Length: 79
Image (cartoon, rainbow, N blue to C red; front, side):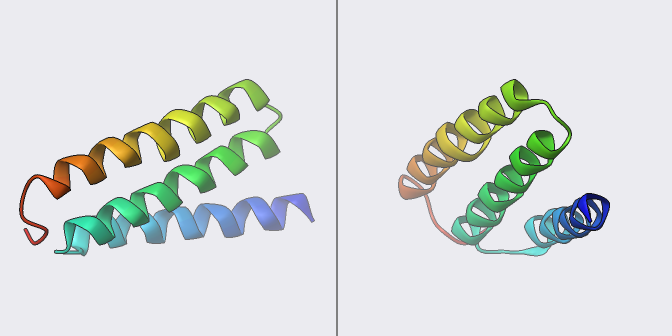
């Protein structure tokens, strides 16, 4: 059962990566990137690496997302 969940999360991660590369709206790209980071944190937890999972969740999904949203607020939203 765990392997099925891991494969589904991996597929969703690839779809998120493709969506980030293809979207023209920068805010949407940041939101999709945050989802990608959260999925990566869940995968690290499933792979029994809780220290890396916490770091990925805090830095990847938290701090990076806030910094990117702040940068977008200072510029135009569309690419």
